[in-house]
Structure formats: C-alpha cells, structure tokens
Length: 518
Image (cartoon, rainbow, N blue to C red; front, side):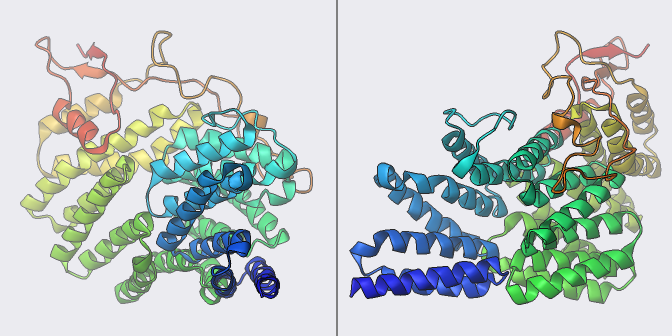
C-alpha cells in the first residue's frame, strides 16, 4: 500500500513543481498539500512527507501566507536538528525560504540570522557574518549561496541600511554573475532598487531594464513582476505616470490570476498613489482598500504599514483628518517597533507636510515638532555613504525636500531663533573622517567589480551601455557633522532637536565633537 501511495506522492510533487515553475503557485500549493496529506499517515514515507511540506510552505510564502510558511519551515528545521546526519542537507534551502517569510512579516533580525546560518553552512566558514566578498562556492551549493546573498541584500534594503545594502547587492551580483549568469535578474533588481532609493535614477533605470530582460529570459515571472514594480516606482518618481501605470497593469495581469498576493497588493498601492496624484481621491482609496484586504490576513507588517501611510494621506485629503492622524501615528509606532527608524522619520515628514496644509497654529506647531528631528535624521543618512556623488544625490533627492519643509515650518511659526540655528547647522562643512575616528563601514577601495559605476558583465557577457557614462564615484569617507557651539557658555545649535531625533529614530545625527561658531 505504501509503495502505491509513494508513487502517487511522487507524481503529485512533480506536478506541483511543474505548476510552480510555470507561474501557477496556487495550483502548485494545492498539489503539494495533497501530497503531504497522502504521505503523512505512513512512517515509511517520512522523507517524501517532509519534501511535500517544504514545497507546500514555499508555495504558501510565494502566495503571501507567511504565518503558515514560517510554522512549517520551523517544523522542518526541528526535524533536521533531530536527525542532522540524514536531514542536515535540507537546512540551507529551508533557512533561505524561512528568511524570506520572516522578512515579509518584519522579523528582520530573525531573517538575517537565518541567512547568516545558511551562508555558514554553505561556505563552511563557521560564521557566515561577512558581507559576501570571497564567496566562491560551486557545484550543488552555488544556487542556494546566491539565493542567500540576494536575500541578505534584500534585508539591508528593507532596513534602509543603504551603505551596507550597496555592498551586499554588489557582492551578490558579482557572485551570481560568476557562478550562474542566467540567474542574474534578481541580483540586478536589488542593485537597481538601491540606486533608485538613493536618488540615482539613470543607473536605476538601466539596471532595472537589464534585470527585466534577464528575468524574462529565465522564465522568472514573479521576478519580472518585481522588476516591473521597481520600474513603475522609478517612472512615477521621474514624472512618467502613464508608463508607470502601464507597467503596473502588466504586473496585475500576471500576479492576480497566479495568486501572488503581495505583488498584487503592491501594484494596487502604486496605482492608488498615481490616482491620488491625478486628483482622483475616491479611486485612490478604492485601490488602497483592495490592497489592504489582500495583505491583512497574512501578517505582512512592513507592507501593511507602508500602505497605512498611503491610506492616511487619502483620508486627510478627503477631510477625515482625525482618521488620518490616527493612521499615521499607528504607522510611525509600527515602524519604530520593527526597528525601522528611518521609515519612522519619513512617516513623520509625511504627517508634518499634511499638518502644514491646515495652517492652524496648533497644527503648525505639531508639524514643526515632527519635521525638524525627522529632517535632521534623513539628512544624516548621507554621512554614512562613502561615495561623494552618492552623498550629493541623497542630499538633492531626499534630504533637501525634508529640510525645506523644516525651514518653511520654522518660518511660518515665526521661530526666528530656530531658523537661525537651522541655517547655522546647514552651513557647517562636512569633515573628512579623522584618522582616529570610527572605522568606515567599507574601506576606501573600489566596489566589487565596479558594478555600480561601470557596465557589469551579464547573461550575454556584458550589459552593454547600461551604465556607460555613469560617473565614477570618489570614495572619501566623512564623519557626521560636529555639534556647533553657539556661545562660550556651551549652548549647542539644535541641541534639543538633535537629542529628540536620536531618541526617536535610533540613528546618530551628529558627531560628539563640539566646534565653536565664533
């Protein structure tokens, strides 16, 4: 009897894999579930049961049901720990899949820990705590190692640790290109995502286009959907809403029928943002509501929180200011609980900008309290970027709008002293990192293979002119600016707001040194 069931289970798993690889994860999940249920009563089929469980959990994660995926992967890891000699080989793939679901639920530390363990298993270095340089595993370990590196770079992106994300994305791209250039799409997408987030729109677009080509050539439909979402964000950011909308509808045509919940939700959210920008608030709210309904059952906390900010903006514009205020406060608190201080600062800037439109003295005072510490925090990010051109792009694309809001609010509340101190602080020079200062996150050396500023190799041996003309970024680490002494008595410019920023967001805003301004 068990032999007959074994054949049935084998056929079901094979059919599920075929459906999964064909872009039908919902159908694949049903087949894997049938296989697991069939094998479970038979101790002799324990290994087949375990494989069906792993496949079912992977499909569940793909569909956005991360709580179910996490529970199953943790069960499998417990079995691997109980029989390390027989089942230990399953651990790397299980850890990678577990990390991806943990990341989607906001468990960033746990996701990174799982990936670090995975790399240690694959490279045999016992630690797995590096940033990817020197990973050169071939054979059976090549593909899981590449997946782990790409996932580690995704963790850094989600946490907005941009300098570390830069290193990890480049290391992942170098490794994938060397070992399996046919799988370069997702690694390229992450490099494009970092470029987009740090204001480098030209390289981001080139890289994303190459990533899309690579994903489509490799039949990675889910990866292609992810890249189109990145491209849509870029098109929206650079004033091309029609192109962004066309990309998002292409995404929905695939992700909706395939049951890819998170990608569908993200596309709906971006369509809602475009509708709001066109002056269609009712349409925007409808799209946000549909996106929220898709995510809510699956504990996708980071994505839900971003969506909460969007819903708050729509509610504010519809005149439901009390509802919007509550949503924004909830979003900021959630980002804080997730350890995403920079996201919390960005949420406070959104809140401050909405309060500014009210014009009421009380609202302006609240907006000022939110905007100044948040703007200082966003501006401070650039001091962690080692390349000068990247710092300059962050300043222009991200920090300047935030600081302009802080200046406007200080002027509108007639706080002349605050305006003067903001000017003083912004006019201070950026010091080169001292020899006795903290060691920079990355030594002053070229990035791996020059992938960001020169054309990297790709599936066809080159990315052609994808990044041709992108200027080489000089790597010159700088220290955070010092605290400015305004008087011999020791008064520090913006002392209370600097302290508030560092307490609220957990990000260092100023160096401990003090420099007199007289």
